[in-house]
Amino acid sequence: MNVHEFIITLAVILLSARVLAELAGRVRVPPVIGDLMAGILLGPSVFGWIEPEATIRIMAEIGVLLLLFKVGLGTDVIHLAKTSRVSLMVACIGFLVPFAFGFALARFVFDLSLLVSLFIGGTLTATSIGISIRVLDDFKRQHSSEGRVVLGAAVMDDILGVVLLALLYEFALNGGIYLPHIGKVVLFILIFLLMAPVMVKSLSLLIEHYEGESQIPGLLPTAIVSLILFFSWLAYAVGAPPILGAFATGLALSRRFHLPFGGAMGQENPNLSDRIDFQMQPISQLMTPVFFVFVGLSLNLREVDWSSPFIWTFFFLLLVSAVIGKLASGLCVKGAWAQKLAVGLSMVPRGEVGLVFAELGLTAGILSNELYSGMILVIAATTFLPPFIMKWLYQTHGHTLDDPA
Image (cartoon, rainbow, N blue to C red; front, top):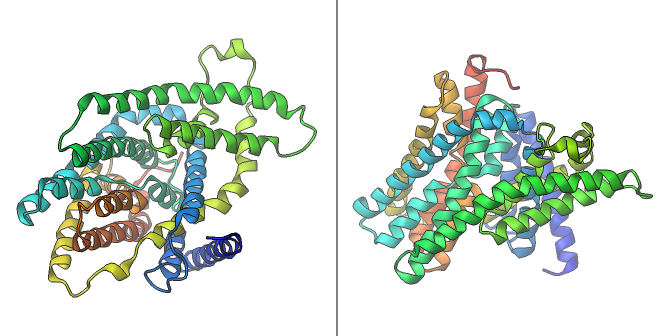
């Protein structure tokens, strides 16, 4: 894509996302659906005006990094720590149950090979943290108890997904799994989770010091965006999802994160997080919709053979497995059944994470076009349906849930 094509493409993406999100809001549909529909309409599924090519993908990745930074910045570290055990249980159940269901269906019902069955099960484990958090934010439930559980669980689910993807990739290449290599990836991720927030917080003290001495405006957003990009790259370098770096950056700069022995390092300005939040909002609001449009662009529904009985059978059974597997994760949450259902539904969207698994399986020759088309339908359904069900849940049973903190 040359420069003038990119300029007009970006303009169309931003404008269409805004218009459709506004329309969605006016008819009381979650605005994220408007962003996703913009991608469906602009992409190969309908008009075919925009392809999900590399330049747009990069912009989308930056958008989701800014979204996860914003989520981390607004997260109460103390409350997140309190829900960590429940989040881990939700993540493990939401990972293992769909994987087992998907693998069993592919292997024993459709009689597919071991590697194909593993990839299909792996695709069902995915949770799109970007879509889940955006949906909760649309309903003003991001800081509720279920919102904190879902946030922790979705982050852990992403880590588990990276480890599983590494296992499947190695199995596809070598026909076996080299455990020391996988162990090294897990170790690097754990080290990153421990060190990154401390490094970010230390650097923020330096940024705060020089902000007062700067002669030109814009030092704070420039420095923060640079930190987000650097720690996202660092997360990728150690084998973790890049969004983990963006989330860790936001978490370290949140109001409730404190360095050990912080008093000896100087008094922190409690207004720094507020200034970061205020100055980063326009950048985040501009870039985040690109990510959701890109998810829609990536769903090429024209590839589906709508007349194939196999695809519909494959789609229906996998969809039931995908939904039940994630809903089961909400059962370990204490509270009313509506609370459990809200957590389970929030874990259902597959979005771009599921697409990564499916596209890798297709390009590696593991999934046939027919199987890939069925997986695309499952990913599309699990991405679009939960926001509508969650809207009904919060409208009819919201009074039984706790108020957002």
